[in-house]
Length: 98
Image (cartoon, rainbow, N blue to C red; front, side, top):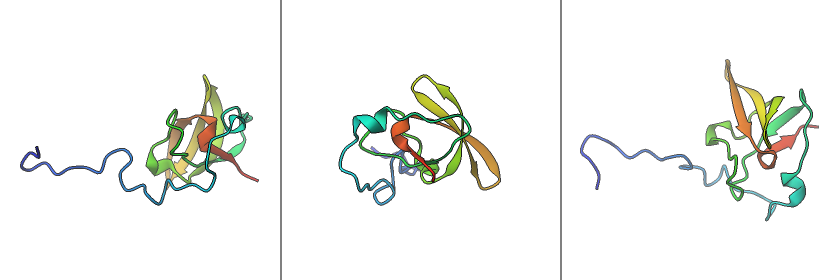
């Protein structure tokens, strides 16, 4: 039941139909086991079929450098406009830049 004066928000994955579309059908073991070096330039590309470590939709497509590792996940420093932000995500959602 909707409360008066409180509009519904789209939520964590709202308005991501085109943003989270993907070309490859499945996540492979190689995607999960990828290794990245600290200082390497990467792009955050969320893979909607793999839910562990899925970054927020606002980070999709941003480029940054890997600054550390936390368990299986990587810590990435990105710039969103003029604001430096930190993203912690698993290797499935990261793509190396050439």
